[in-house]
Image 1 (tube, one colour):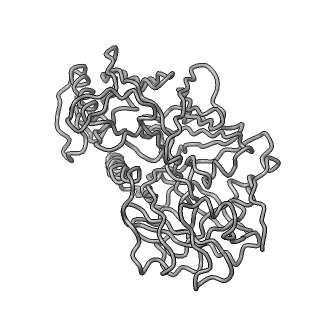
Image 2: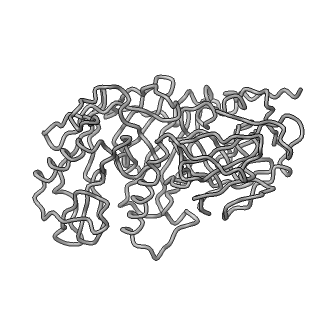
Image 3: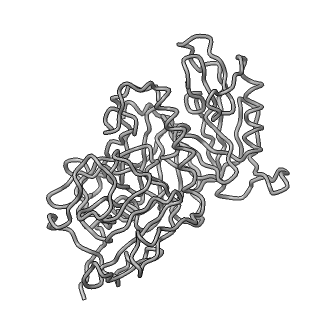
Length: 441
């Protein structure tokens, strides 16, 4: 039997950590960038993807058709729709390295990319990864721990020799990926080489994926995510700083790991991470939201639509890939009412019918200075949101509130996180926020 050591050791990184650019899906660095599109159109596209993406946080009941899977395999039911991610990471895989443009996702675990031979693949701009040409590529045996970490796995199908571990993931929108669980060297930037990273080498992939990415880089809390695989070598720490929508298009966001990902200094506030199933998602506890000095206690609605104070821990997910912030319907309505009373401007309806609170701007260059400060009161951490975190200019003469109602799950989205250094410490089980000009990092 083949025995492979899949433990990643700290010698590879030492104490320095590392950082890498995050490429916004709508930026000039993205292969799908359309220079003729207006900023408002790009923003609307991100809003649309938010509503699609929220389905990934719901239990999936979809499965792959029999034509997509071998007769001996069953799909793993996943909760993610990876094509709806907002940020891309340009990395390389294999020896020699082959470019892999992956969707960065704090709401999923498995790292995967499309591989040759592809019996069914979606179009992608970079060349397909060919495992035969990589001297460091290894298939994962069925008896190994990484294979056992999958919810379901299959071994030794008609297309494989021996006991190679095969994975199958299906998504709520009927997208899917299937292939071999493998290990290889992942290279980030020009100098950070990560050996023996476990990933999915996808030979059958389809659905809503597009050519902007070659696969996905999971940064969730599960054992197969990049963060978990790096483990002690990064001390369980990573952080990101997302540039605001108003920044120049040639400015990129940053994500950092290890010592480079530590968030400390004046103005830092921290809130506990709450362990809840599935362990992929990062759950926080939101206690209230204030509009100016008016504090609204956070609550959900029960089936009788009466108010239920949401004192339970882990009532909201923080996610880097969802643009909008989703809140329980009743609480959202109370928040909108408080904002409407506080803002002295002409209220208008969103012509797209997506956002529930919009105001007419007096001129095309009017700022959001008249919008009140909104504070998100997490357990132990008051995160003061600027108007750019909570309102967006969606037309030349209109700005709208970017928190929306949800009947299913609450999500603290990436607009609310922009111009914050957001740090995850999985060892101490905290998430920290520090107001930061992310364009200068």
